[in-house]
Image (cartoon, rainbow, N blue to C red; front, side, top):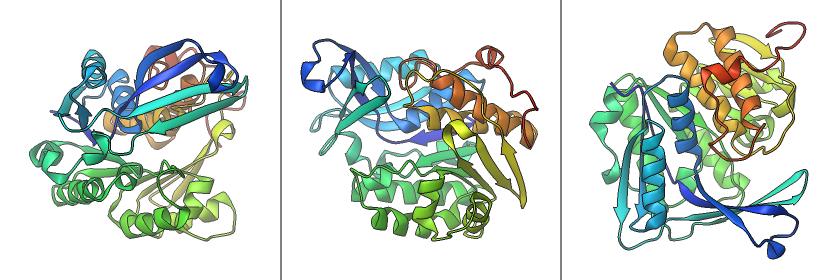
Length: 315
């Protein structure tokens, strides 16, 4: 049985090897990147079974995405689109500490995703449906696909997970906030940074106040991420804080996807709440220690390499 189903746009990724302005880059590494496929790979590496659905161009980049995900043990439902190309992502490092990511996805195959592309039976038979708020920002048909998938999952009693993943290049804070407020009442698990959470609610209090305000919209599990400062989870009315892992950051892209993958993998494995939050933080920390959107996603054995906080896992 496929435990987790997700869908969205995965793009070809060109990463500059040289630090500095993009115009001076001469060499690029070719890979792939997409929030939802990152989560699928992350959960698969941590022992879960996953399926990813998406449209790709009938081109070499689409073939790359298909083969890479298959190689990671993901059940790939890549739909070739002969009329639109695979989207592109260009990543550079302007300085040693500043990553510059640019997207070329307008009119891409991934943006043409629609409800007809989704396998309702696959979604209904899963334990988790994971979506991100990137997909509804791509197009009207992609937005309808998200709505359709959530409705199918809820009708079958499947856990619905949503990562806000706000992208200002795709829609305004007002547009994103309106869609999120209209949607999270149908969601069981919500992942958001503090800034993303405040797109949904205008609560001006502490992070704990924010988590409570978000939970009041419907989600049973609210995860507020603080990056290098750890995370807060409010689940079924009980709040927990996880202390951060101390690591040297090499590439921050993909940390949020790794966090979500760690939490969801442990939920699927039946881990207790404190353990799954710790795994989420550990996975997010490990993901930033090397280059790549998904290449650095950890396996269980990798997580044991991290040093735990001196005063325990959580507080």
